[in-house]
Every structure is written in C-alpha cells, then in structure tokens.
Length: 208
Ligand code: IMP
Ligand code: MG
Image (cartoon, rainbow, N blue to C red; front, top):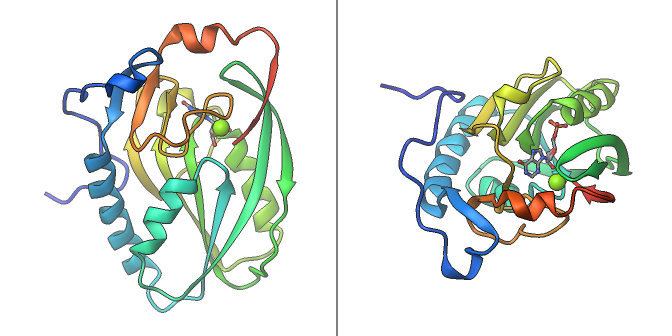
C-alpha cells in the first residue's frame, strides 16, 4: 500500500540513547536510518510534483539546516535556494512573538515555491511566513516539514509533505534546538523534562 505524505508515524520502539547524551535526552524518537529513508521518499514525491517547473526552495532558518541539506541533495531538479530568518522570543519551550531576521532575496513572482520548515507545531510561524510570501505572488506554494505535532495546531495551516507525525513532546536534534543547543544530533530525540524545566524562568531568544 502506498503511504501518503501525512500518515507516516513512528511505530518502532525507540532506539537507545547514545551514552554521551543520556543525561540530557530521555529517548531517541526517530533514528538516523528512519530519517534517511523518509527523506528519500519525500524527495521522490517532490521531484514528481515539481518536474518541469521553475522551483524556488525557501527554507526557514535555522532548524531546517540538516533536513534541507539532505532533501535538496537528492532532488535532481533545477532549483534556486533562499532563506527566510525567523526568530521567536520564548519562555522555555513556548513560542511568543515572531520577528524576521532575514528577508527573502530571490524573486518568486510567478514561480513555484517549496517552503521548508523543521516542525509544524501551533502553525503560527508558517501562517505569518505564508502571508508574506503570498504577497509576492508566486505561482504556487507547497509546504514541506520534517515533523508535525497535530495535537498542538492553533492556526489553519496544512503541510503538503510531512516527514513524521509526532506526539506532543519537545524534541531536539537533526537541526532542532532547545535554547540553541542540540541541533547537531544526527537523530531526533526527546529532551528530559528537567532540562527544559530548569530553563523555564527567564526569557530565551531562540532562532527557529
Ligand atoms: P509554530 O509556530 O508553533 O508552528 O512553531 C514552529 C517553530 O517552533 C519551529 O520552527 C521550531 O523552531 C519551534 N518548535 C516547535 N516545537 C518544537 C520542538 O519540539 N522542538 C524544537 N523546536 C520546536
Ligand atoms: Mg527553534
């Protein structure tokens, strides 16, 4: 049976947390091998959908860094690449106010846009980014996210390509951070509650 873009769930028992990370992480949610396999599936789908189009990939800084690199290296389509910088003021793991730290440089008028983000959580980030992009009159915008937490959605935003549906857990790794750390983990892991709770007091400025 063919898997649709949005019903891929993590089914297998989590892999062991590497010894070096055991003090900070409670589990590996998605392994490197699972990510690799799923990214290949997504690229195959994207490749079919954008064949023959004038594609501009727009990635949101900074959490997409690993996902984007893996995604585009498997796309054998002519494409342009640009970034939009977004940053949110946060209390612990809760996003507050969104600010733009880098504007788009490329012209997207009349072009096909693939907007890439790390995780679709409440949907507030993508809602604001979409409003900005639509004003530039691209031909169409498709959204690709590595992760989606459906349970937390507040805004009506739908992703066209979703790597993994995940439960309502705060995750780090493969580009995703907590207080700018853990982006370098090659897998997606679940942070121990005591790590993010200990930082709950005081505001953190967190680049997405
Ligand atoms: P949204 O605006 O609530 O959809 O949040 C999107 C942004 O919040 C993402 O681009 C992430 O940077 C961040 N975020 C949401 N959930 C997590 C998480 O579990 N771990 C790390 N960052 C997260
Ligand atoms: Mg972030």
